[in-house]
Image (cartoon, rainbow, N blue to C red; front, side, top):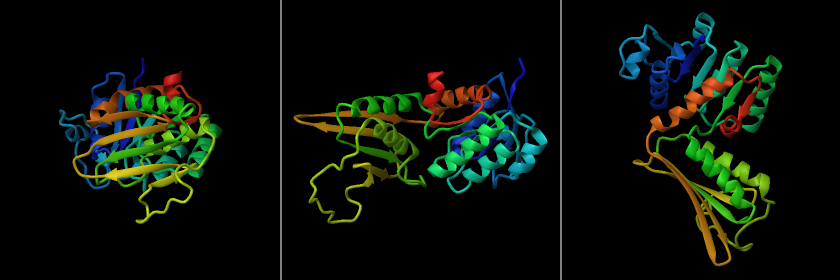
Length: 267
């Protein structure tokens, strides 16, 4: 069986290094390109603490895709660069697997149209953790019976976007099964602006940013005389790699870009 050729964008970052390691350790995958803005032309395997693999890190994504012709590009970069990276990949016929958050709905719609036009598979996933996907699914199920809820998500203080992509995706799933209504006392007043969190279809999303935290999220449901809490905790980046691995192998079978890792689990 021919190996899947993979390019990794953001290869020197904390998630990128894990992706490089995962690809190099899977015999069905082949690392053909590694892109990082400031690392310099080091061997990509050195980023993951592995023996040399012969792939040099470059800062020029477009040139890397042109010269190596990967099947899939995995991107864990920043919200400010990911859209342009994804556009470059799609224009070169490379299937994007995107773990970076920060896309607007219009940007996702544009990328989906471009991929449909080219019959090109792809994935934008706010979270690659199977446990997090289950947390979102359970929350959507619970919202049918407990329509009053709030989402609290916790990340380290270096995370750039708030709320997290996982929180936004959870809110979107909940809103599909919950009729919009404004929660809380109609006369409530914030004594400090933002104290009640971000407003989404009548409920609130709270973002906590502190050093020492990796990634957690809980959805709290309230009803008469009872509450229900659904929580997921991630402790290290390696926990996302089984999901990234599955995504790389699944998108080569798709002919469209999907938003949300849960769609791959349904297949």
